[in-house]
Every structure is written in structure tokens, then in C-alpha cells.
Amino acid sequence: MAEVWDRAVDLAVDAPPFERNPSAWNQRIPICILAGLGCVISTYMALYQWNLIDSVWDPVFGGQTTAVLSSDLSHDMQRRIRIPDAALGAWGYLSEAILGLAGSTRRWQFRPWMVIVFGIDVIPLGGVSAILVVAQGAVVGSWCFLCLVSALISFVLIALAYDEVWACLKYLRRVWTRHRDPRLLWRVFCGRPDARAELVALDRS
Amino acid sequence: MWPRAIEAMLGLWLLVSPFVFGHVGDTTLLVVDLAFGLGVFCVSCLAFWGPAHRAHLVTLAAGLALAAVGYFGHGHPSPPGYQNLILVGLTLALFAIIPSEATQPPRSWRQYYEDKARRAGELRPR
Image 1: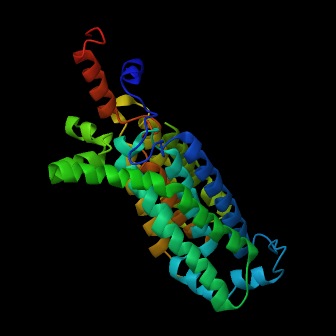
Image 2 (image 1 turned 60 degrees about the vertical axis):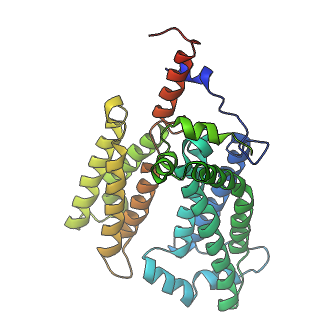
Image 3 (image 1 turned 120 degrees about the vertical axis):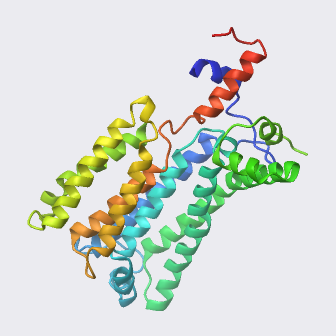
């Protein structure tokens, strides 16, 4: 079957309103690499919080990193979520990398639910967690170089990921504006094929 | 099928977890690790069989259940075995929401384009 559909559809087509494809691998692979780096950094800090390593590398703030990672605020967070906050952060970055890898290069049309889940993961959740990381330093009164690097990674990820999410939202909006049919919108969101939605997908008007 | 392969590996990790974290004496945790580990491994392998390609939805439920057992099964401070359940459960749930043919368009869309091309006479009928 692969040969047949492969000839009938262009997976590299531009996604309106952009004149490029925001689901292309050359855009998604850097997101995955950056999220992978964030995962490694957070895992490294989690190793300290699990007492598996004695210290954490910090070329700028020195011992302040360990003060942040073993602060009362951090312990309070661990009491609430049962695992070190850095471990949850590592899982968050891992989820961004995995959701970035999943789906074809036309997933903004064929699997909108996946792009929306990816967008929720990267944009609101990533943004809030990055702000909390920075706020944690302000509350504790000590700063952590790797925490700031991971917060910066989250902000860069938002900048890299927003256009795919935007293209997908615009597509869903076009489907709704043209047809005003909740069932069709749900079908499209779930990634089921529909000739009416296909006509709308590449429409730039 | 890479999400299913990773789920199978996570199932194997659950099977060896009691020995890694040294909680073989904790019967509850041991049973949870072994039962879920074996179940996840089998379901992930089953998903490679065409008609069962949606078996990963069972893994999604199992992942969430594992995370819940890890979270509610022990108060603070949570022992390593329970923290392992939380992280493995969340990671299983993460992979389980990804369809089996993860980097291709959905089967229904592929069929749609195949039918469309055939109607247009671009392809010979089956």
C-alpha cells in the first residue's frame, strides 16, 4: 500500500499561512535534540537530588546550585509529587522530544490532535515550568546555572515549536469557519480523512 | 513501530526492577512490578501483529495505573521502587499515546489517497 498512497500525496507541502512546512524534519529534529539536551541536564540534577552524586557542576554560581536543589522549596515539591522536581522536569523534556518525533511531515493536517498535545506540552507547560525554575532561584535566594540553562531551553523550544501549532490551529479554524460542523471538526481533530477538510487544508484565502 | 519497541523494553525494565532496587521482599511492589512488566511486554509485542495494532491503548491504561500505584501506594518519602513506578508509568503513558506507525500518515488517510488516485484513473484497480 505504501507505494500507492506515497505517489498520491505530497507530505512536504507548505502549511498555510506559512510558505514552508513547519512539520518538516529539518524543523522538528532541532526541537528533539534541544529537548533531549534539556532531559540530560535535568536528569543530571535529579541524580544529585536522589543522592547518587555528591555535587553538581556549576561554573558560574558554584555551590549555590546544591543550595537550590536541596532547598526547602525543592523538598516541599518532592513531598507533593513524590519524585524530585528535576526528575519531573526530565520527563517533561523527554515528552517534548518524543512528541516532536511522532507523526509524519504533514501531521499538522493528518494528526492535529498530536500537534495540539505537543503544543500544550511545549508552550504553556514548558513556559510555566521555565518561569517557576527562575522564580525558584529568586525565592531561595541562590541561583543555579543548569536550572537557568534548562529554562532558556524551554523558551527556545517555544519559539521553535509555535509555528507548527499555529498552522494546525489555523487549519482547524478554517474547517470550522467554512462548515460550522462540530462533527467534522472532531473528525479532523482526530485525524480522520474527509474530502471537505482536504479542500480547506491548503486554502490560503 | 518504535514506540512499541520502547514500551516492550520498559516492560523488561519493570521485570528486573525488584532486583535493581532491592525490594524483592516487598510482596505488593514485587507483584505489581512483575505483573505489569510481563503484561506490558506481551501487549507491546502483540501490537506488532497487524489486527492488534491498537493494543497500545491497553498500555496507556497500564501506564496511568502504574503511576497511580506509585503515587498513592506510599507516602513521603517515597522509596525508590515507588518512584520507579511513577516515572515508568508516566513514560509508558507518553509512548502509548503515539500510534504504532508513528512517522506515517494514519492508515485511513493513506487509504483515502489510494482510493482517490484509483478513482482518478492514475492507478490500475486491484
